[in-house]
Amino acid sequence: MMAQGTPSRQQMLKWVDMLSFAVQEANLYLDTHPSDQAALAYFQEYNQLRCQALNDYAALYGPLTIETARGGRGKWEWVNRPWPWEGEDC
Image (cartoon, rainbow, N blue to C red; front, side, top):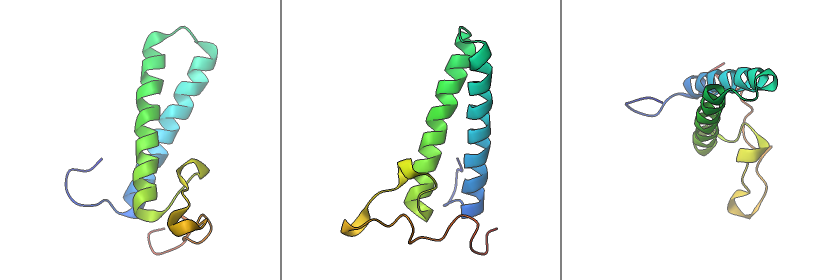
């Protein structure tokens, strides 16, 4: 996503939001145009980018989705981290 340094929480959230929007719009388009190969390739590319962005965010700031939640240190920590809207970055 960014060339230098670690992106801020706010920057990463914005990136995840942008990718999520692109994936959702492509998904809606494919609902009515299921044979559009270019749209399918676009969906697959941006869905992969979104998954990576979610994993990157989870590694630095905690999970945004249940798919990126991991039981660390032998216990479930999903609810122990600050929520995305908590803190000074919002």
